[in-house]
Image (cartoon, rainbow, N blue to C red; front, side, top):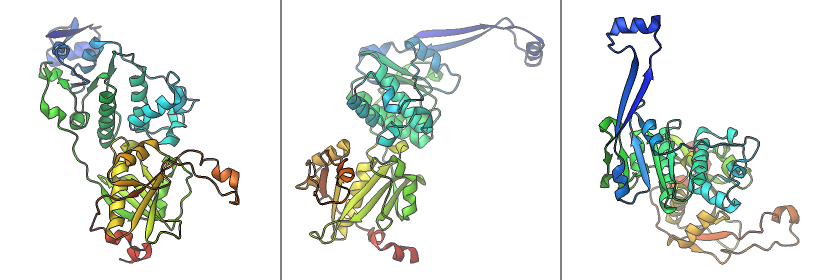
Length: 378
């Protein structure tokens, strides 16, 4: 069992004299705080994530500092976020940020100081995780102390996926118990429980399920999401807009358009799918896309998607719920008589992931597909 003693000499004055006389303090020379901890057992088994858990002032930071030096991220406010990771290749940074739940591409091009609290925290985690040398234990203090609690949960789930996939080691100190089921640590240590290392299967039972609410929404809702999409911010107001919320907070949106083709009858295409940065990293985008496909299939419609997002496209390539179309993985060839040929096709040089949804139907939501005027009048 390790023991940390924090001593501090008291500089006495009239104020400290008042404390002694009023509260019967015996020692007027120094203060002493003792913190017990025992992390030696962590050497006896394989682990990736450790959590030092306790209330403010319990000694979490002192224990963490015994493990090594704490890293602090340093961002250049004049550079785009992605350019601050110059020890990695551009492709590696893209993978890192996406893995940490910061997959909003426009966010990568903004300076750090313009990001939201949740985005800044994820970016800081990505910085500290990627700066660690091979075999080095990553140490993070005050984990999730400055973010919304739902954001803390999604962030924890994204972080643990990345740490385990890359087989890294990280120890975090936090005063929040609500992250346990989402972070799924291999061990915990609580100074308030004597500092003993605790393990248990309950820590690795998998994250809780979340329940989203869906509603048909007005086109103006797109204003809340548009800056997080990698394509143009413009959007057709005649398209169907579906809003997804968690605990009464907007999480994601799916926008659906009729298929721009006369060859397919009763066919629709997902025009935009956006999950807000605070809720990325849990697969919400995949699930809401599947859900909308299931609703359209329940109405006897065919539902298609097209994206250049590699993570989403490769997932659909592997999924039994999606079938690649003949254009899947191909670079579109422009028609030379098309207006604005050069500018319109400048961004069409990469292969697109093109799929049709063939997964389960989702019944009971038929009213959401009614014309928006009919929904307004209900």
